[in-house]
Image 1 (cartoon, one colour):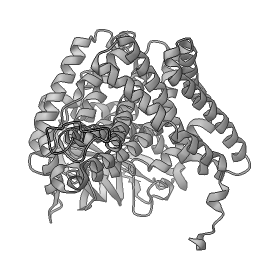
Image 2: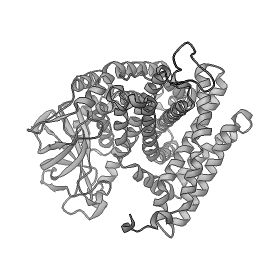
Image 3: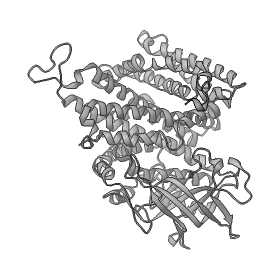
Length: 593
């Protein structure tokens, strides 16, 4: 049976030693009174809730799954409803929300650490709440005053939940092909007709109402993505008091039988003349939905980080206990029949790879969350703009690089267990299955790569990337006089220069053949991900060197060295792939496959 203990020591290292969260947040008026003691108290309680309430339901949810009933109802696994009730009673959904609508107004930086823990404990369960937070973000920005007053307090409290309804059978990423129609009724509402698929938490028994954010076309909509509008379609229409009223004509037709995340209901949703209300402007639904989608993409990064952490923890514990073979240098435990497998170099390679990617991901997640708080709350407009540009640049990296690395990590954790990892009792095979969806939904990782190189880099002639590169260069310059930092800053500086050169090369090629950018996209995103991790691992090494000889800091320094020597060299091959261009990919015609 697996176990989970929140990595509070590492979280505190990142928050208070690496990014100096207390000082950074003090510069934001909305969070100026937040001290470390308060943050610690929240982290401690979240760790307890994750361990005692949420984690025990993880394997239960995987084994039982959700049930679809003939009348269209969906019931969730045993214990899910009660855990969600405790979740709302404790105020967790409101943690990072606006006090105007009942939120606690705490920073995204803290909220994300809480969600990382809950994702480690049970990703499928947290998805019911996680999508609601993304729906909240969309309505907060684009909702009318009436919509905000009616719906946001219910989302903030967790009394009602939310979904995002984009995908249809004939269109996934290419939303310009969607067919769901919205007809005006003349009273400010619309009647929506169509079918959506792959809708996470589309129907369930956890909350009393579900708010569906649905993309659809108005009768006069132009073709393609320019003709998409966004609508709010409640499962139950609010009555005059804003409470649950008449049942709306949106129903689950079925639930998907999936590879993983069995505890979350992934539904086919039919809209049979369902009443809905426009969010934002007509034909500009994608702009509004992208607020929700980007929030969800960062949330998917937290899901993968959570799975990476819990699988790593269990693999380390197993490697310390499992006896097999002898240390090549001589018996480590001569009084026992064999040595623990953690003595073997290849097992250490797997564990250190998982550790380096997981702790690097946590550092980047915290830094991005801090930039989000600066974007929302900094008193200076220019500082808000700069922070927002960095968040935009890194959003596809968080979604794709985190999820790729987490799938690798969960697979390595299973491999450490050997045959025991392949059977259900260990829990490792569930983490592999659950992690696999994160590379697919909210835009596949290939789509994230296209977004990074196209919209986030080439579209602004590399301005966002240069802004991030300036941070990296400033650190390299600052550390160049310390001989102890040479092993970190020299490869970091070299990678930054390589990416700048590759960016210019791809931009030049793309001017004559747009396939060049698409061909480079996936290895290019991984290069940028490594640049971000290398920058943060070098910064963590700096902190560890200054901290002295505590076991924690020595381990951090050793992991930094492993990352630079064993994982960062991947970038040489990635750079070669980018340089090779589109020709090797396009040389074979379709029939040749």
